[in-house]
Image (cartoon, rainbow, N blue to C red; front, side, top):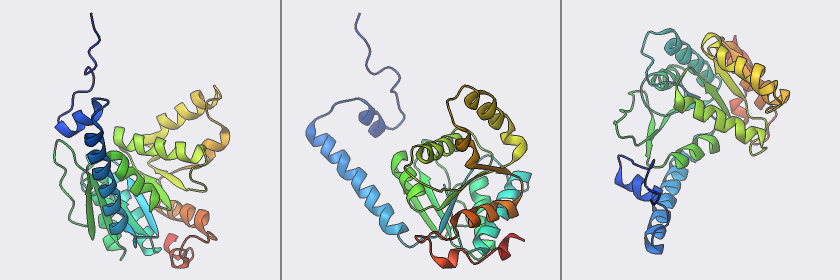
Length: 247
């Protein structure tokens, strides 16, 4: 009995299925590389002037008026007032709240969406909206142009973005990168897992956890980011005007 090499690789989009099938003709692989390269170039061109930027992550399923929606809106408003561009996935929920807060704070508001089988509508608070086919291209954009991440309650996608960022920090691919996690009650079980299991078994180091800031305070979130970035010669000085926006 042979092994079914297609098992576990069924996808809704034919292009994704072809990508995961394994070896293909050289011509097809070259065409795929060209598509990927074009997507990178399009993103680089569109986002070249967005810095200084903070990326906000969180669930698309949290609605206007809910506590975490308002927390994301207020935090992003303060970040915008401090001189930062706000970047999100461009969809509803926490993403909408963050882009809305950016607008209210007088800052730029950007959405980097991903093509999904179930269409995700862009929220109405965007100054620039980009859509990517490849998850890994989108992730490069979010890290390349961001000076900090703020993580609100979310699901698998939010966890993926959080842990991928922490892996980049832990391995030294990015340095002195602030990661602020908003919503203590929501994230407390995750923090307990990190400290009570991962740290206890030595699979992470104490300094790995020290890089995370858990808070419910928009003022503390902004102050943490400003403190981490102050003095960074790569960051435009206008992005660190002082602590006025954190009061």
